[in-house]
Amino acid sequence: MGIVSTIFGVFGFGFGASIGLVLGYFMFIYTQPTDVKDPNVRPLVEQDSKSLQQLLPEIPLWIKNPDYDRIDWLNKFIELMWPYLDKAICKMAKKIAEPIIAEQIPKYKIDSVEFETLNLGCLPPTFQGMKVYSTEEKELIMEPVLKWAGNPNIIVVVKAFGLKATVQVLDLQVFASPRITLKPLVPVIPCFASIFVSLMEKPHVDFGLKLLGADAMSIPGLYRFVQELIKDQVANMYLWPKRLEVQIMDSSKAIKKAVGILHVKVVRAMKLKKKDLLGASDPYVKLKLSEDKLSSKKTTVKHKNLNPEWNEQFTIVVKDPESQVLELSVYDWEQVGSHDKMGLNIVPLKELTPEEPKVLTLDLLKNLNPEDVQNEKSRGQLVVEVNYKPFKDNNIPDGIEDANAVEKAPEGVPEGGGLLVVIVHEAQDLEGKHHTNPSVRLLFRGEERKTK
Image (tube, rainbow, N blue to C red; front, side, top):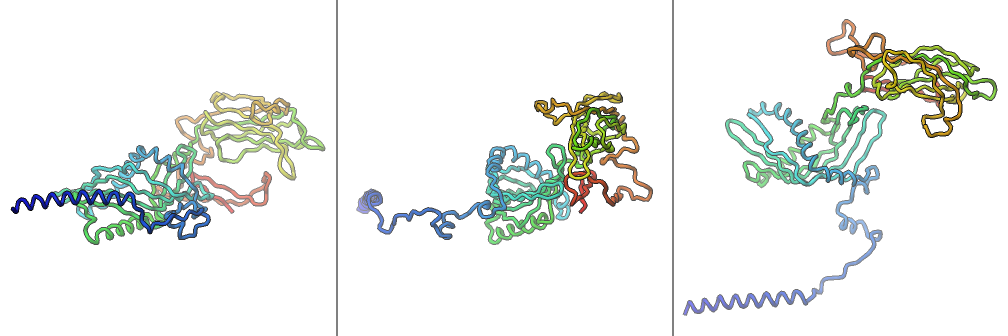
């Protein structure tokens, strides 16, 4: 009898449960709750601040702060390049971390610390905005706002006292505001010699940690302790004004060295056009090499002369004879106001035969545009004699002014050290459109200084 009652009990429960589920389904579909109200639809401009915060829990930084620029294009670029950036960043991280680890492990009597696995996962970081600073130095300063909720896989193997332990970092979240400085800027790809990284405030770091395969963060109190410890350690190392330096190239080698000398003799000019209303022009010649930051060299002024003769010699340091050109410009000197350009022309150094003097008669042009019809008008001619002499065996002869040359230090200077003293006394007969605020710029081996 007991068996029969049990069978009927089980059958009744199954039948009752089935009927209940069917009835509940139909009641859920065909009945409507009375406490649900239609949403209040209003334009965003009519919403109050509390409602907007509920709709937009996180407003982009470029909206809240006008100093930050929107950089969606950079996020799209990083998304497409992330598989390659992942490998490059991991390689650079290993290069930076390995010497630091090698320096620290002897203090804790650890045999070795090695990366078994290091990848940043498939989720790239995003930048909420970027602020760019403009300075008078040869540098580029950027402050991006970084947010990264990624799925990296970082496994570190620690060996000590004959034992081996593995530490795995995963589910990483990093919110940081770094300052990235590219300096000094140099005329060689990638156009900067070093990268300096500083943190403007303590970063937010959150991650999972497995020790010997077990979730270490589940231990009470350990999660917050480790999180605050990492924040403090990173801040102590890289919180501004402290910074991390990553050298890309040697700035002294990035600037091209002298490979030769160009001798230029400005002989004469012929059939120049009169610029002054009363009397003839007062011509003089400016000459310099392209890609040269030094100021132009100038001849003397020949007053009231349309066929002047100078016969003046100049020497100019050459750094790239394949790309540099000699720029020659004839001006009409004016006692008041700017000087009028009478014509110009160029001499490509690659067209010169080394050690062979060459006399050139150049037609003066309005500009260097070959399609400009104004160049068909006669503006006179300029006669110059040029002779390019390359250095032999990379030896720079004495007496050549080269900003990259390193001369032998005088007696008394300690080994590996010295002092360069430059005193700017005065300037005379300055030319140009503005004479009210002159200043002097000094450039030495990639470093620049400027007077008041």
